[in-house]
Length: 109
Image (tube, rainbow, N blue to C red; front, side, top):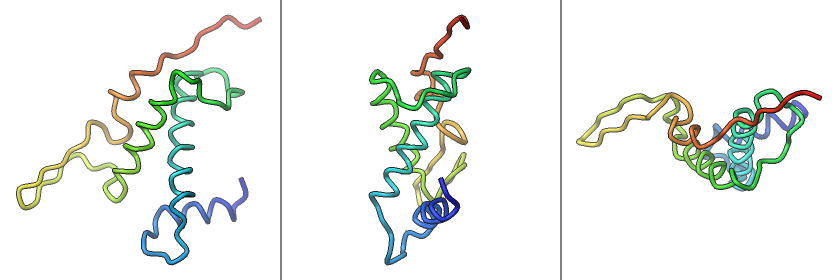
């Protein structure tokens, strides 16, 4: 990915009020972030895997949704205001989602 592409993605993620905002691009970025997390956990010693296994497709979508919904409150562990209280299970992705992913193990040939 080029620096220009990275800048475009970053700009879309942080500037909600931009007239050039591309929501489809943002959604794709969150799906990619979720895919990277699934692959990192499912294949901890195999960097050649590039596709999320079908059995983790819904987990990928749930992680992407979680990340999308946390926008603007990343890292929040507690918040209370006018009778509304928020806290997150973890500073990053909740363990309840990550625990659904079983690491793949194998013996090198």
